[in-house]
Image (cartoon, rainbow, N blue to C red; front, side):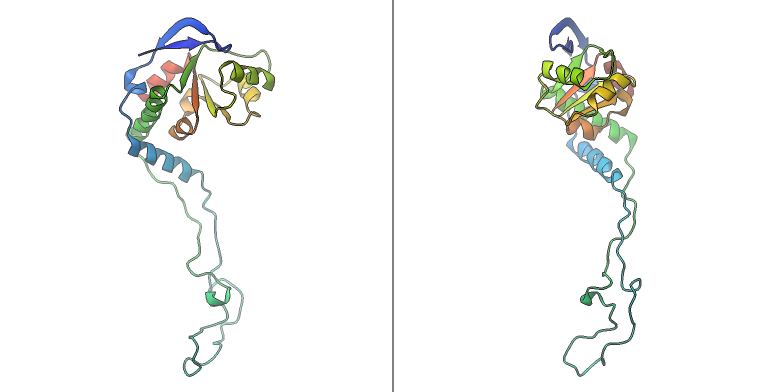
Length: 207
């Protein structure tokens, strides 16, 4: 499967690149996508939430009144959660991460890329660079590629300070290296822009 390569001016370069169908045109697996997204979001959670339970709050442990004969409920102490003190079954610090097999992660990423290809939301541009970090230069690139109103991800082959610094202040735009691209980011963007030299890196990583 071939796709045309565009320049950052938004014009065709007259070149095309072969996209491996085993990576960019598989039958998407929705459950693998769900698991990968769930794993990503779980790993973002700190898990440091904590509330004090009745055994941890300050207060008297004296029984408030006799057990029977008052017509009211039984109350053990003023620290009872009913009085708004210690919380019953409150959250405790925990680790939300879980294990996901490498093959499932790979399948999920392939599925996400295949969805973008099927939806014509994948763009391949020739490798580019800026002479200096300048937000205005990246805004111009977005405008030329008709991405101004879209949430987009640019996939570059290696770290590039000029590109990264030029794009970091622009909302709804993310620049990542090919070896850092994850399933959640792919599915969370409207347009996926892959630099020409990043395509073989993605194929090598996922095949």
